[in-house]
Length: 112
Length: 111
Image (tube, rainbow over all chains, first blue to last red; front, side, top):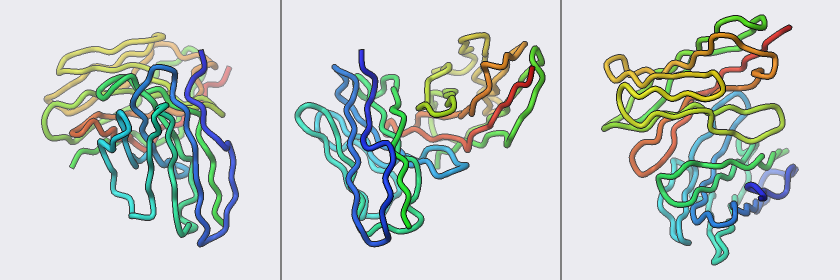
């Protein structure tokens, strides 16, 4: 069975641009969460979606947005990129809320 | 608010040495506690968990006990192997199902 897949694996952008990151959950999983992991730090919670509805939002500016599609895949959008947005963005899926998280390998975003 | 404080690394041990990685937490209510491991080039994987006070989580020779009185969830292994080299993250699941992670502890085991 395929695990959580994220695309692209690496991405380079310049300040002010926007970026879209994609995540496909494990088949049957209905919840997707997004985390930002800055080098040397632990993952920081950005969003959680369940059944296409936002169920949680971390302390991130409005430049960050996300959505979940009917097939339960998800996109994370970041507008007006800043240098400080450079990080590994992790997607995790779970069967439902309160269930075990399965993480993807992440998208490494570099903002120049 | 909810948070996790984790022992800073990096930690370097010889094979078969005893491992302890300290983790303490701050939370409202009664969170579930987790240890995740991240091998080089891979995503985070759940190593073990405990959902209530005095529970002991265990997996692959690793253990951690949920201590409410000391708000701790220290990770231990009696005899580490080279294959245990990875970054270890302590985490709690707090209100709203949000996970809070520690900063991670890098472990290198040398033969």
